[in-house]
Length: 448
Image (cartoon, rainbow, N blue to C red; front, side, top):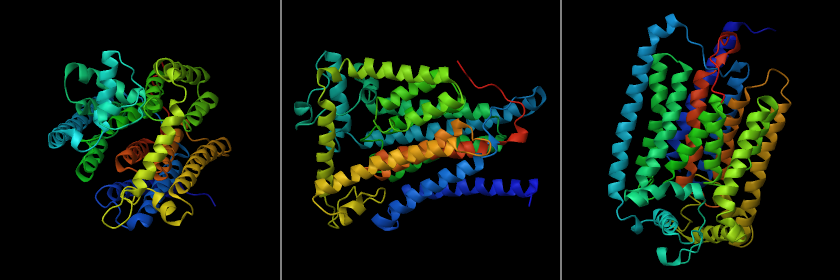
């Protein structure tokens, strides 16, 4: 039986609306209704939503193309100004409102030493670098207790300018987030969507940020995690624009800020190598490798090769501490926050806390490897026309990050925001994928 074009179009629209509904449910259950179903059902529901978002986006992408449409002079003249007004209205309003919200949050969390050691630790790195001291030495006197230097260079290096000029670190993090959103808005502009769709999509990143700030205590005041949202946004935009210098720079920033990306990166570069541009894949891989060597291994890690393993052991010790940090209900606060599966291992795994955490770490790495391996095999074995690899790797990145933070030993809410924010790009791709028959004229992507 052959499906009619009308029924196929209706099916596609249904999947598109499903993606929007899944995104809305994920946002609500992560923010305003976090832990609504309790510490065991809530993480299961959130992770199921992430899987459903991934599969729905891939289902919609099958048979469709990710293109930057060619504008005709007549059509562009009629719609360009409407689109521009729509994009600027939504982006400026969202940026202005959230900037004021950030200012309020920063003023509310002074001095930051009273709440957490994240920003004081960043200050220690920056001050050591400016004074020519050893950056990666234990932070005993700066923090008042022994703490190994665990932050990678891209986590602290952007704050050297803030330290030098004497302004608040959190504004630097906010600026990097805005830079990522600016890249998102530029990508949206290049996609030439109708003005109403442009208006809505331009505001999505700011809606998500507003939800995070207003529901998560201290997200802006005591962390700089929104800076990571900016890094990853730049990477995704670089991938979707097919602009290798931006991909290389953003991937380097991501790798030099967290280890979380290292298992996904080979999938991304491998698909680019075999299905797009061998040259660009090698250029990106080479740039990142040289950057890691030049900005981390040679100046810092080479002076203490055992630092990496020492830091990993310290993470385990910190996880044990958090699993012993009980709330009023007698349960660990962070493992039972409704965002991760640590609660299952705490309650049902046998052995000591170290053994339970060790088991969780093994499952964690195993699942990440499984996600990437299954994604690679599934892409290669596609029988019909393959999904654009750029859409594919970005969609898999969403599932990968959701898996990474759901099975983290301590699922801190501020860390898990990165996985949630990647859904913004799934919504954008879902709205802008075009049927192959309509994608005849394309504007070449940036390919420097």
